[in-house]
Amino acid sequence: MKAATSRTHSRGMTHLMKRLTRPMSVWVLAGTIAAVAWSARGDEVAPAPAVRVEGEQTQLSPDQPHPWAQGTKLRQIQTLGPGSGTPAQGAVDIGSIVVRHEGRVLEAGKDYVVHPVSGSLGIGPNPSVAPNAPITIAYTYRLRRLDSKVKTADESVEIRAGEPALTVPEPPVLKPGETRLANIFVDYDSDGTDADVYPIQESADQARTGTTPGRIPRTMARIAAGEPVKIVCWGDSVTVGGDVSTPEKRYSAVFAQRLKAKYPTVKIDVETIAVGGSHSRQWLWPDKVPGREGCDWQRIADARPHLVTLEFVNDAGLSGASLEQVYDEIRARVQSLGAELILITPHFTKPEMMGFKTLRDPECRPYVVSLREYARKHNLALADASARWEHLWKEGLPYVTLLRNGINHPDDRGHALFADELMKCFR
Image 1 (spheres, rainbow, N blue to C red):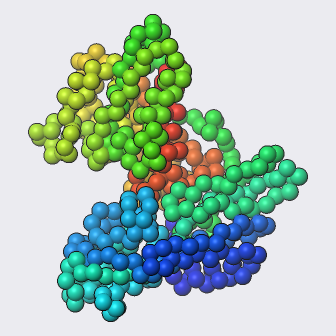
Image 2 (cartoon, one colour; image 1 turned 60 degrees about the vertical axis):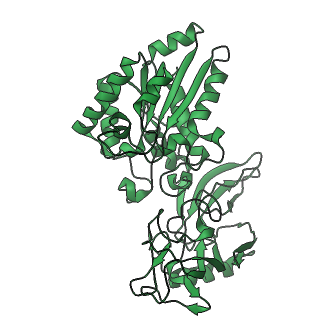
Image 3 (cartoon, rainbow, N blue to C red; image 1 turned 90 degrees about the horizontal axis):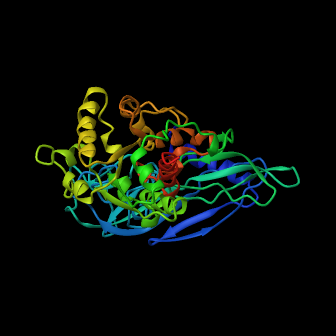
């Protein structure tokens, strides 16, 4: 995406705001936010809304700032709410940051350093203040918006503004008799004139994925016989449900709800066994591969599943022979339990992680290519969630608007896509 300078953004905002009949004004004072909302009509697209924060009180971290971990985070751009979650990547205008200690303005690059993407702060190379010194911060950040080109019931066409959001904006709700023709993505750095247009080309039902029905015959036989079924959803922070609005919205819970609705007379128990930040090797060989607390294959074995689903976006470093070695071990261990296995291809993560140049690029991760081939070679069930994410732009949705933390955690809608593909395996 194009990176706009603060000056360029300011010029574009001023120019376009003059042409809007109801401009938006948003500000934050002493850590509190106030806003006046507006709805754009006609052919104009407004710039990304800007929010000014003044007087945010915190401490200057002794650590070097990181995209999402270390450093003093700017509270208003944390993705789960002020003071909670990772910083929204790219939301803050770095040049707008002003840091003060006891009323004195500190010098960037000397007293403190700033991460260029997250805006998080850390102690500088030649500071005039001590680590953890109390500071106040002022800064400007922007919100995203997803507008729509709508054909109304009377056949007229208008641009309707969506509700601004920090990371996961949604298109405006249609009225009866209306048709959405396209969505218009106004990202953080957009002045409105360069907003990215996504015509509605296909529906979600038209997405073609590699998901494979018919490859869990023993599980399906138990269901047909009315026998109890135990399913373990095994994985990393996505399977844990990182950044979902409620635990009931993580994909394993949605999957369980849909199974219950589809097979109401069968007792199907779905258990989530997952550890955030983990990858599969840490579970298989915890004594050899440094892992996180709770990574132990015995937890899977003790659950005595009939079916195991596997989701590890953190296995993305595996491909080819390395994937064969690890997944041969997984397959053998699952089979030793008398269970069947569904492999889940991962969702899309932020473009830099994907190696993407645009939000319309096709899946190209070696891990996903190898995982699909491994499922084909060994006749294993595959829930191809990746292909659903790849199709989103044809549905008018830039996939990044489904990443709640702006990095690698899907929102509720993204979790539902996993459940969609898992349920196809039960046809």
